Each structure stands twice: as C-alpha cells, then as structure tokens.
Image: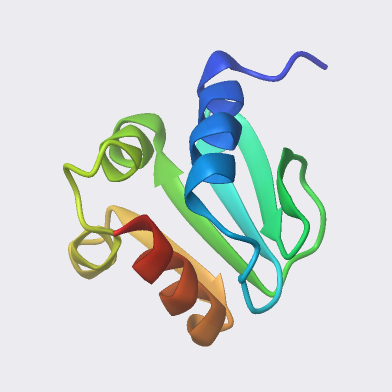
Length: 97
C-alpha cells in the first residue's frame, strides 16, 4: 500500500512539532488519504488501535498543520471529529495550535 503524500508530509511536520509528550496514543484519519499514529515514540503512518481517533478531510488537516485553523475551532465547527479520550485529543490539539 502506498502512503499518500499528505500522510508523508503530515508525519514530517508533526514529528518536528511534537516532543513525544503525548499522553497515550492518537490516530489521525485523513479522509481519502489514510491515517497516521501519534504516541510517545513519535509519529508514523499507520492504522492501529488508539486511545483517541481524530478524523478530518485533507483540506482541514492541511489547514491545521499550517496553523491557519485552530484544532479546537475545527472540532467546534464539525470539521474535525473526535472519538475516544478527550484528554489525549486536547493535549494533541494544544501541541498543534
């Protein structure tokens, strides 16, 4: 399976931003592109079980990565969905904001 360029870029950007202090595991599903995993060891392409799953379309995810969209605002407007541990999601959102 070929990992999309969106996932490749996201792994690179998030690896630079996150310092490994994610309290648990998170999966970020980018609709139509794939998924990536974030945990204490870093960021990698994957689709394993996680404490929280965040889902967004590629445009919203890109906007969050570029700092144009606040993750909390994306959640509040329904552009980002969260399923699972809100504490992990909030810690991740703070790291991305």
